[in-house]
Length: 143
Image (cartoon, rainbow, N blue to C red; front, side, top):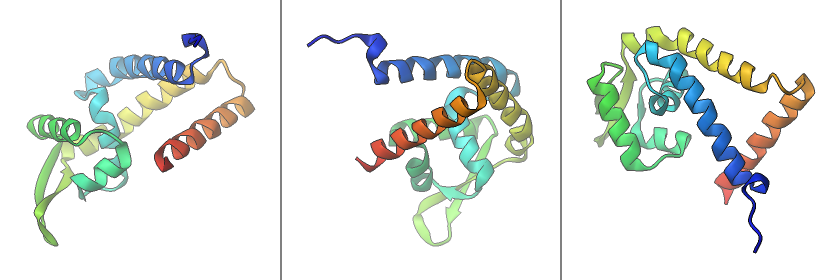
């Protein structure tokens, strides 16, 4: 088998993701958040007061990774947890005022990273690229 990383979709996507994450980290570090927290914040900025199980379905990380990240976010004053009134075994995750106040600056940071990264593509290419990525993600999720 002749494997070449420059022809591997998985390798290229992973490499690109690391570059995106590195650039995003530099931009959000002054806000007091890290790249690993960003997907969680994105989900909570859309819908606050969700269970850990709900977050797991949305962001596709391991249970232990999410639990550790949530513990750090709670320690850093970004989230708070309350008992779920409909399920005594579960907790609901809520953003603090501190985390809510970071939203617009964090969105700006992410949009700027995206714009800079995609500047090598024209608008139709950007739209097509985004569509292809969504299609691949949906295909991998559905198995």
